[in-house]
Length: 574
Image (cartoon, rainbow, N blue to C red; front, side, top):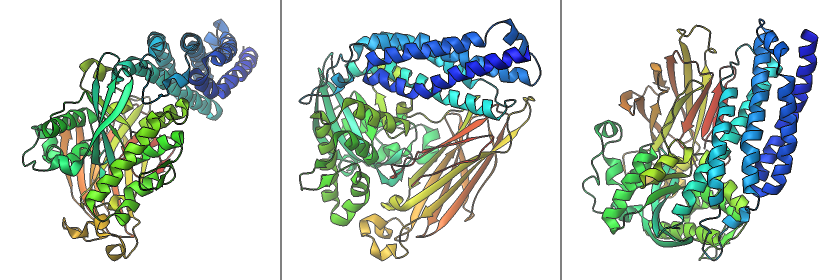
């Protein structure tokens, strides 16, 4: 029996390795060239079918019951069966339905998109979602604890591939259902596009520096007006809406009094309606939805369109967009009104380049996909049915949610300086488990979050940086220093063990949406680093951990910090 299992397992592994090595290119082909994808997928189906056949039958079933070896065989069997389900029941039907659909049909021409470009994929993508999700969950549910090195790594790789595939199919399904209506196929729509500025941190990125009114009608897209946050906040002495008490205990009424502070609340299902109410009161226009982006997203779009020339002759590219819009502009234009004008003109120019059809549709989709994965692109819809489609996705901007596989922190950072000093701050965040899950469900485990906040501004920042960047002490913080107010959302089901900073700063505690929230404030001087440590404890079966951190000005770094119970994962966010 052992020889038989060994031989068939080795053969099955070869088939599975070929599936995993070709999976990424095949997934990309589904969106770029469905006709070629069908042929590739049929070849992968032969591999998955062979692997599944080799790991099925009574001998494998009997061997999977034996100690030590059994869990290895059972895990491998689950991966092969799930791979076969994913390819044959999800990707092949979807790719066949996509034949004849050109991804380039999604590229606008003369400012107009084809609202029905993806409509024929809505039903097959929806049908493919279930099998893909089931396959990904089956692999995710494999107990990794007893697995030996090579098989453990193989299961981890399969988990990544299956999760990415299921996420892709789910996103395609939701997009194909939402996009036609969003593009106004049944009548005119109005959307508010918030452009956050990560140089002055707010929980979901930065202050809502400007708002663009975008109109769609039967695929035609136009940019109507641009309003500054300063203008939209002017003469607002009372909150636009009454915020719930659990929100005001943490954030006060600031998000409902100042347009800049909308995204201080790290739940976009709250921020979207708040922005809608703000804009309606100030302009009389009630929008159908709210979208938020940041200059880093603009840099991703510029990768697709190529560099553009601004009205003042400046060239804006993917390489300089973030630094120019979040730092250099304040050195060039000391007048805030000029800064707002430059910011609005730059954002508008990027959108116009996109609407002119510059670049490829696939490059544009890749840009938006990256922005969504990094929580830099968020959306809320005033239509309850559309919001239900968005719910549960990263672009809906929900609070991080803990499940049986992954414990999730939220680490949200806000500028308390009234400055643009966040551009110079580097938060380095790490996570670590004290142990892996055990067979005893009553065993409590600890999860630690560590944050280092470093101020990289020059030592003479008080005099060498423009007053608008340092804040000039207007809110009680010394010029060149950066006051950071942080909110740590603990994973659900975990209790606080300890929380401390290297400066001895106090923490306050509150509750929002069933999550314990710790709030701290630190003043970081130029060239200084301050540490923050939070330790929690729970009986979770999760072997993975994540921290969702405020997206910053650094386009090269992921705002999602990850760790497993075997490893310590570190991500540096600037």
